[in-house]
Length: 160
Ligand SMILES: CC(C)(COP(=O)(O)OP(=O)(O)OC[C@H]1O[C@@H](n2cnc3c(N)ncnc32)[C@H](O)[C@@H]1OP(=O)(O)O)[C@@H](O)C(=O)NCCC(=O)NCCS
Image (cartoon, rainbow, N blue to C red; front, side, top):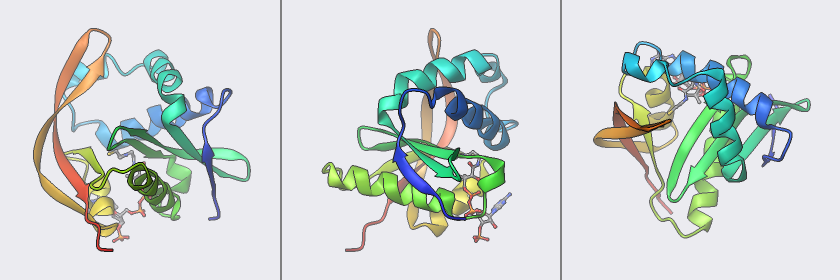
């Protein structure tokens, strides 16, 4: 599947939020505290998408957004791909794009957090050369405060 990666722009937020909500459920249901689900509504996916649009790149196939990557400091904060584009290389391209942006910005060791029970994502990151460096209690942002989610911290192993 040939995709094009570009910076997100105004007007993308509805589709990005739609991809995010659906893919988030696929990767997280059953693996995060029940308490977090009440906060992860369509409205909050949309408002959070708007807030992070300037840090987001999207992948398009035939002009339709099928995935996105969001960067924050030295972190790949979000990586989500629509079910229709999984297993096609879109996720690999988005991850490589995000990592190269971080390294170009001077971050020698990009990292990310993945929910401990998200086996597909963990396998994917390991296949792409990321290393599991251990347990991390990730503070997932909600309206007022955070919810602690059991995660693994992965770092990119740079060989060049
Ligand atoms: C995680 C994600 C971005 C990866 O993209 P993808 O296109 O699905 O990744 P790929 O298909 O290239 O690779 C997935 C790998 O996991 C394997 N896999 C699939 N299901 C699996 C499972 N239940 N357990 C372990 N490995 C699994 C696949 O076989 C493949 O490995 P292989 O190439 O060695 O055969 C995508 O699945 C996604 O968006 N998932 C939902 C949201 C999510 O979890 N995001 C990550 C948040 S940190």
